[in-house]
Length: 136
Image (tube, rainbow, N blue to C red; front, side, top):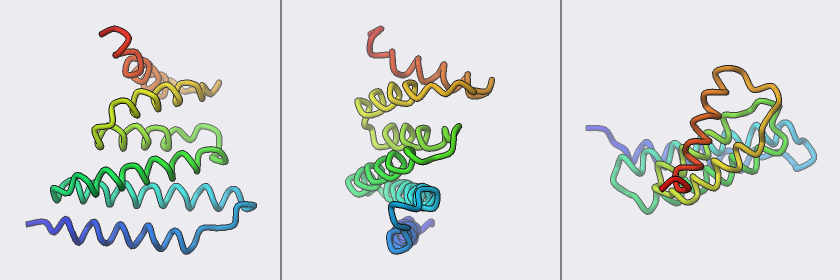
């Protein structure tokens, strides 16, 4: 049997370690990378909590992941679509459909000019997700 609690504690420790290592606000590149790592650790803790049946704790960790990914996005390199996608995954896994819809719209608003073909498919999927309520 998998010890989801141990997985969650390990990810929580990674997150806390990330807080201790968070660079000053004036070092934008190092800060955005560390915030992304913290978002990944928070998402990992959320998934482990969810698998362990702790939905309240999972929801809190998913919300933390969204916050860190969003915070890191401002200074992310162009084409850093992993953060918006991580935000959407966290919203959906937390069952936050309203937040997922709002963040799908926000992601589309980022509209980079250099979207590749594979990212175009992602973009079409996001448009479909964000307009699903409009069609209902």
